[in-house]
Image (cartoon, rainbow, N blue to C red):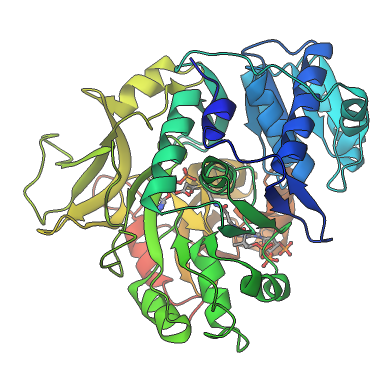
Length: 503
Ligand code: MLC
Ligand code: AMP
């Protein structure tokens, strides 16, 4: 069976065709990509990374990192990307849980992370900087560029992506070559990607959206991308006239609409804007269309499943909906109590089945079993299907906050706050935020005179990535509880709903 890499290149783009255009103007063509990824694949073998071994990476976005992803996949090893914002504490868990063979970090974090990797028994630690420096990049430069891509089974793991869990313990989603190849090849057709397309790539590449949806899809079309290190409005405005497509989280689109330079002339060569990872409000959909003349195509996905549904490329892209099940993907909506499919128009839990659905959580068979029902993956998202087949996401059964497209599980933050001796208990909630969609807020009950927002934040900063840290903390005497003594988060969300906006 073919490797993901081979399947992504089935359209055989010529070696001279561009793959990535970098901010400094450098162009990486498909031939160079093959050589770069081949060098990394050869190097992994030299470093003792075998098939199935985990390559954990916590580096800034760079084209070398893309090549390392592809080299890992070509070698039959498992790519495990980590958000560069994670603290050493968080990294320690991922390295230990995954039993990674190789850990690659930034040159400037090596000193802090070496003991973490050693404690997790990682055999090798190497470095890769965003400018292509570092010990791994140096050694790759000396490795041979030609590599015979390893044949794998459909069910062979290509990647593990950690997603936080409701209990606070992150789970490694095991993603196979078939999951990724089937999804990318289908999306290329569904969204009409062609070799002439240039994708504006400003997403991080440690998640499904920027790594798989964006990069795999353009590779399967033999298309190219303008590869930006992060979302920077000036750089986006400068790049838009040279692009045909863009993928982003809703925050990208609201920031564009807020910028007076964003207009129809700027996007004259664009054919498609795609949004996902968090809800795009119907108001934002309309505001964007009024300004740009483009109806954003909203789609719905998950780390565990890649892409599930999408608004149509041809046809009406309906604001506030995530469109139809994608070809090959089955969706059903079931009742939370009876688990039976609900009638059209009624709200229930979205369940997913198809070649896109992951193999399970790394070394957590019970957790895996509990999230599947009769072969369907139970998403935890609440949705409804209307009589024309459009699916809307109306909420979440899982206690999850999505801030700027990044998932945050309250339990993980509550656990750290609750360890502070003066704290009795806490409730972490998501509150509507004009830029991030939702922002993290902590409501804390305890010895108020001994506590302060600054003190709590400084303790959280020691163990939690910045994006998980609350944007506001409120100290209270008591948390509201229902008759079953359960904290009423809905009441708290209601009470603080205007914290970041005008009433
Ligand atoms: C950065 N910060 C965030 C944040 N991103 N805080 C909360 N939520 C976020 N998402 C912090 C920074 O550390 C910084 O801290 C402060 O907020 C201000 O930073 P900023 O400069 O405004 O942030 P910026 O770098 O512009 O990043 C915001 C963002 C970025 C929205 C552009 O987070 C982003 O690119 N998000 C995309 C996430 C993504 O790819 N999700 C896909 C998941 S896959 P300080 O110290 O300065 O206060 C998935 C499946 C699917 O969900 O369906 O796709
Ligand atoms: P992640 O675990 O980071 O992959 O996030 C997946 C979750 O993001 C889904 O379960 C949804 O809750 C949410 N999500 C993704 N796309 C959309 C969308 N278009 N609208 C609403 N929620 C979305």
